Length: 96
Image 1 (cartoon, helix red, strand yellow):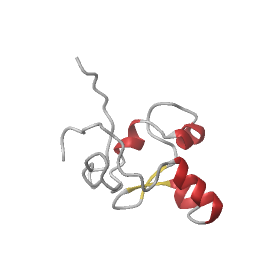
Image 2: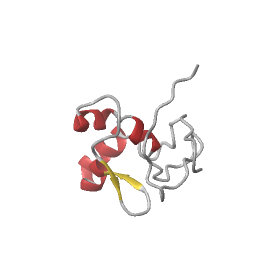
Image 3: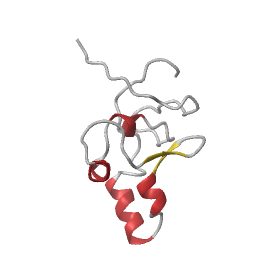
Image 4: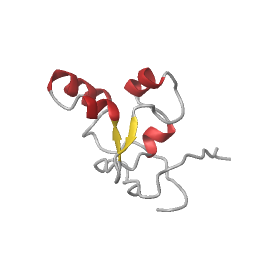
């Protein structure tokens, strides 16, 4: 029997893209568990990442928003796998 986890997703969040598709800010992956950088920032292995932010139309990484350019921005983008495409295999139920 598969386990079920309940996460609260903003009602205006875009639908989760298919794995491999470009990130659209749906937030599912970061609401379930933080990435390696998020684990450091959140001090947890499960649950919503403390760096996750809602910008009014989609979720964004607060760590990347704070350091968008330069070497630090490059390191953050690399650590959160920005631009690598959706790697979340979870499929939310409810509003799609």
